[in-house]
Image (cartoon, rainbow, N blue to C red):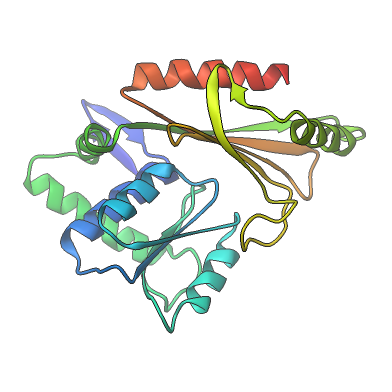
Length: 243
């Protein structure tokens, strides 16, 4: 979505788009504790916060909508599918399509935009209302490409070292827990992903590509405002670079 705000067009991220849609749906559409909301483990924590505030059933999957589709099927006899999304854009609002569905998304975005326009709100202003309510979430992803010949070997070394480090802090921010999906975390399929969950709910996830000599670092940073979030992000990013 490109939103005209203060005479400039602002492109919303997949995380921001999904957060706006979910808040809109939970505010104006019937739901209950068995309403199923699904995201991937690298999607913004803001979606989880919104889902839990409305007392719905929240579930995470590995990255990729195929896992989200599997989860819809797994729970279809016990939960009412409500919404699914992941950070790289794409969402689903009905189980009739168990994949990213641009038609459903475009329709609900149009409805939502029209609704807020009647209240003299742009989607940027509504997003800022969410930040005021839940805290400021700075979500971004940093892809790092390496040499084609030695890249995969270096990625293996990086992931191995991170697992051996037994980190307790990143840039003076306390790590509450480390989720290592390669070793098998809860009921997730094994996958070469590490997630560092900080004690304030922020997380950093590191996921190598399975086909290219590169890896991605996902950040979901929670703070009081944008300035503090950016400072925190830069400190964490710099520390990770040294590692």
